[in-house]
Structures are given as structure tokens and as C-alpha cells.
Length: 150
Image (cartoon, rainbow, N blue to C red; front, side, top):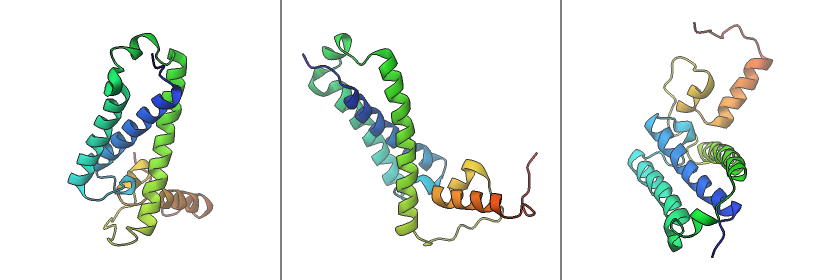
């Protein structure tokens, strides 16, 4: 009988979360988080990644019927691995999409934004690296042009 290892659960969650993050970024038009800028292709690949992750983890070798009921990852271990894997997938997504934005999608299109957005909404127009750079510039520079929302 095969025992489910923590690394297998890590791979499952990582692939599923990466697919979900790309799907969410596509639906909410967060261009700064996308790996591929083509919406239909991103949707198809995201759904395929999620389906593949579930298939690989649960249905490969009939794991859902035999192994998962008797030798799964312990509850506390599963929670810890899930939290760290989700955080890792988010960071990896932000880094990869920022690098792609810097080197592949470099200024192909203007942002077309009139008003500067703050927080996570900046990812609609710029990558995570660019948003961080602007945030640190704002802290070190003057805040005269900053408009607060009520």
C-alpha cells in the first residue's frame, strides 16, 4: 500500500493553486499576474492545471479508494503544508509574472490609466515588481500627489 507523502500533497496544492491564481487573474483582468496574456488560452490552461492536479493526486492509481482512507497526510501536517504551499504558489506566481512582464511583455502596451491605483489593484496594469518599486518610491519621496479615498 502506497503512503501519501507530504511532498505529493505539496505538488498537488501547488499546481492547483497556480492554476486557480491564473484563472482569478484572468477573470479580474489582473494583467500584472498573468503568465499568458491571451484570455481563452489562459482559461483553458488554468482549468487543465487544476483538473490535472486533482487527477494526479486522487485518481492516479485509484488513490482515492484505497490509500487516502487509511494513510493520508495527518491533519496538522496537511494544514501546515497547505498554508505554506499556497503562500509559495502566490510568491512564485508574482515573481514569474513580474519577470515575464519585465522581459517579454516589456512596454508592448501602454497602461492607459489616468488615475494611479493603490494596493493589489495596481496588478491590473503593472507587475508586482513595478508595484513594489512605486510603493517604495512613494515612501521615500513626497506624498504630495497621493490622493486618499474615503
